[in-house]
Amino acid sequence: MVIKVFLATSSGSTAIKKKQQDVVAFLEALKVEYAQLDIACNEQNRMWMRQNVPEEKKPSNGIPLPPQIFNEESYCGDYETFFDAKEDNAVYSFLGLAAPPGSKGHAEEDGEQEEEELRQLEDEEEADVEEEGEEFLEETREEVAE
Image 1: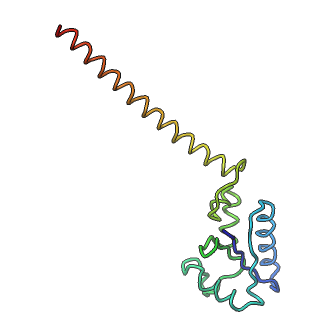
Image 2 (image 1 turned 90 degrees about the horizontal axis):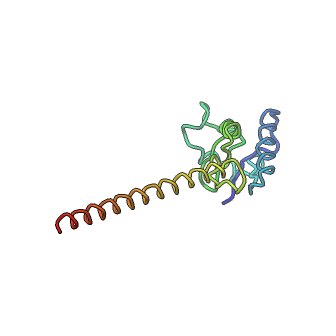
Image 3 (image 1 turned 90 degrees about the vertical axis):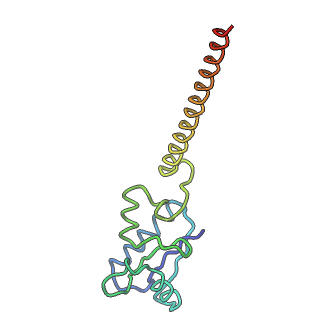
């Protein structure tokens, strides 16, 4: 899976440039594989991005601004949602990626897996105890009957 970051390499907006740099720098720091797709010099990229940003995520003028982030064909979000995910330590989830071993997101997944394994063990122990109790009752009945 490749993360696609739609950028405008020749943007006149300092704010857009900073947002684009922030996204790219963070992905590089995480060593996430991504592709930069320029919407300023490539009409196909611009049209694809505009068509694939969900309607409810588009601004009132209908034209989404870069950076826009996708996981292959799946829309992840814009800079604001990326920033929120970064603040919540949920970037891997935001990107639709599994967190690598040792990362905070991975530790949470490990914790959930451990909890599930514990629940399964507890259920098995309960079943064993019930079975042992039933066997004891049966043996006691047999002894009383004799």
